[in-house]
Image (tube, rainbow, N blue to C red; front, top):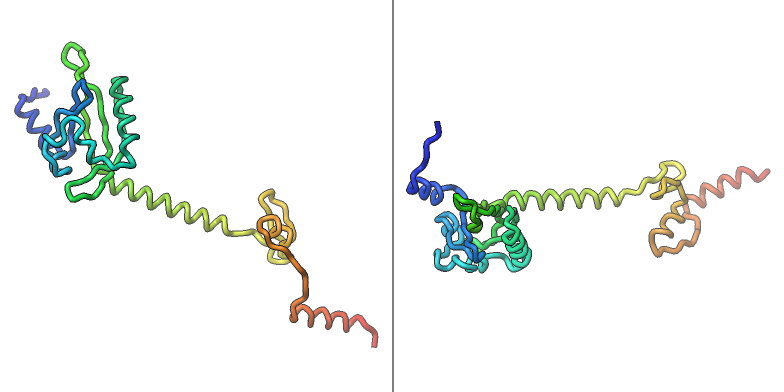
Length: 197
């Protein structure tokens, strides 16, 4: 059997829930932030209400954040977005914000209610993983398949070609040919063995 909560019990739940909670009226301006939000931002309710809360949104995220918010508000549809919000110590933290429309008992639209959690550790871990994968891919791209015997290189079309041809096609290098001292000695020895004495 479920127990119906009193208004004061609801208020305690909202204020002491371990997430940031906000509410926006029909004007799209926010008219409520719970204590967790205010503790996170270090600002007063008076500073945050209306559009005051947007002062804490990172400038690089502001336009995207506002576009998502206004579009979904007008369509009265649930949204999810991530953006950086300035914490009380001045650091920007990544926030996962989920907003949903709410209605009165007769189905009249009243605005939006939202909840936010700090997801900075996840975002930074994903960014580090992506960077590591990109480094690994770059390193793999640096490998060139070369024959151990004839020294031909396998190109992107899976054909084997002379190293000079491959390098000429993939760089601005020009080749001149000569013989190194070691090979010269081997060639001369071989030629010497072919000349009758």
